[in-house]
Image 1 (cartoon, rainbow, N blue to C red):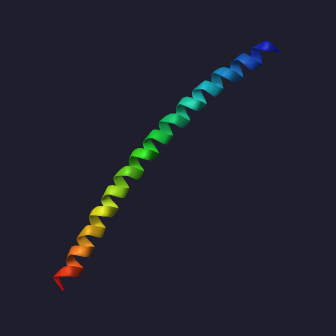
Image 2 (image 1 turned 180 degrees about the vertical axis):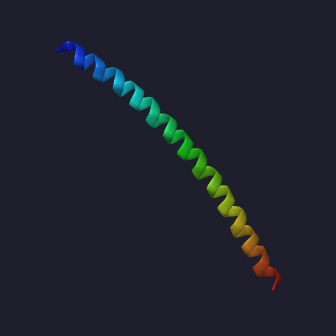
Length: 51
């Protein structure tokens, strides 16, 4: 029964790495979308001031 546990541990390690990679990607996407949102908001504010 020790073998399935060892296999499960290896699968768990891969899953942790995959989740870490996905979290890193998601964090980067969130940062980019936040920056884009701030830019759009700034442009919107600027156009409101021009009226």
